[in-house]
Image 1 (cartoon, rainbow, N blue to C red):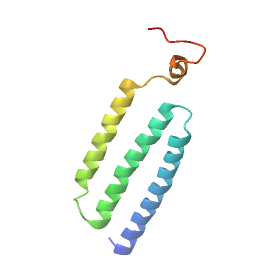
Image 2: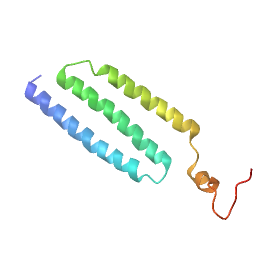
Image 3: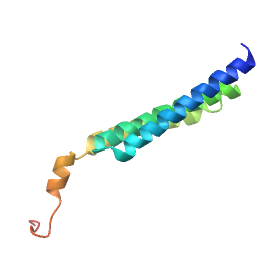
Length: 105
């Protein structure tokens, strides 16, 4: 493949990843509930892996494979942790004690 075309295609892919990451970051920051924020975080994790794969193709260097595996593992474990210990958003507001109501011992 022509090296100029190869670099151009990788530059376009990097630009698309950058724009998609900004959109997912906006979803993560402005998400109306915690599940929307989780979807944004998962999207950013997946796009980071794609960016590392594009970098690996650009540099012809496979040393980035191990950080990609670590990121994939951390993303998976964080999803499991949030899914297991997540409190629904409507119950979180109800379960918080207020000044009018005292907690029962």
